[in-house]
Image (cartoon, rainbow, N blue to C red):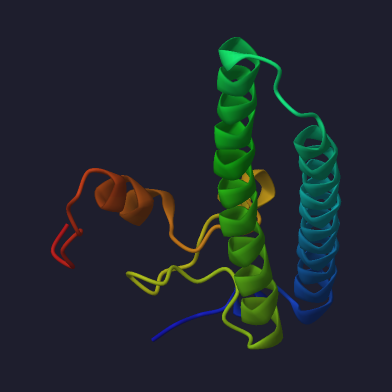
Length: 134
């Protein structure tokens, strides 16, 4: 059975801890949105400059590639943060999406948008899924 972080501690402590995570997640989401807006503005300004030779064109292409990759990573992280906020709202925050065990507070303190416990995240990263027998 899935247990939420709020079931692992007293109500007052759980509410305080969830509020802490909610605030941290909202700050992170806002930082990501601000960063993406700044990147978009910088990219628009960069496009106004017409490359004068192949070297400038190559540099501009490289900068566009970096921008797209960074923006993609920021967007992916923003989705993970927003998903974590939905889990708080849905009372499933702090529960591993793979094994349904609680995610440690230490992990949530480090990565508040964590969807998996350390064991399952390592298994997923290695391309394996942990069994219930382990």
